[in-house]
Image (cartoon, rainbow, N blue to C red):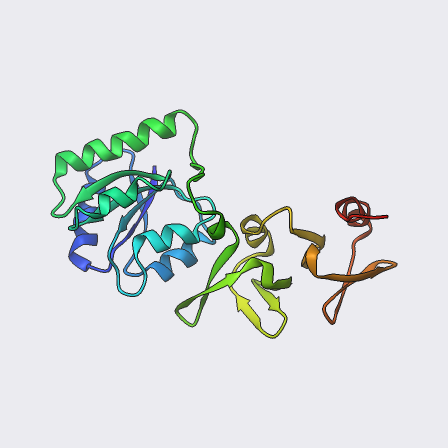
Length: 236
């Protein structure tokens, strides 16, 4: 079972690391003092479990879960027992550990996740997320998380190890692959027309030959994608 620890308190991270090291089959692959670094890591890597602090400066644990389209299992850690009620709103949250963490209670939480993983369900769905959250992206720009409504995106262009997310009046350069970002966009609205481009179908101005006009940008359409694109449009 691979996991990461997200907690702004160094002592709390050390305690969780120690408890994980004593638990057979648990491997800590990342330690993060803030949600933004953890968010960047999860854009590149998949894990089975997140130990997540609820209260962190500027970005709560619940805010963090909202940024993840397909959240791994989550065990919340906090000294605030009142947060337990809100935890029930999230399908991916499996348990709630109150600080200071009791080792026996920790073992029980890990066993819950292990049993779920044994069933083959390594990526829990989160149907209780609000509809609005599915239409939002949080991107990491200069160590800030910026919220983007996906309906405002014109297109996305691959640029090496980065992508450029283009809105009508703003561009954002983000360190993520085009394939990974595609997984986070609503499939009914966004379509990859070329190996380097994903477009917002609602922003199409016109299509001519093997190109599509999005706002003021002319985007190439791969021959293999043209037929599928036509099938997604309301043609008359």
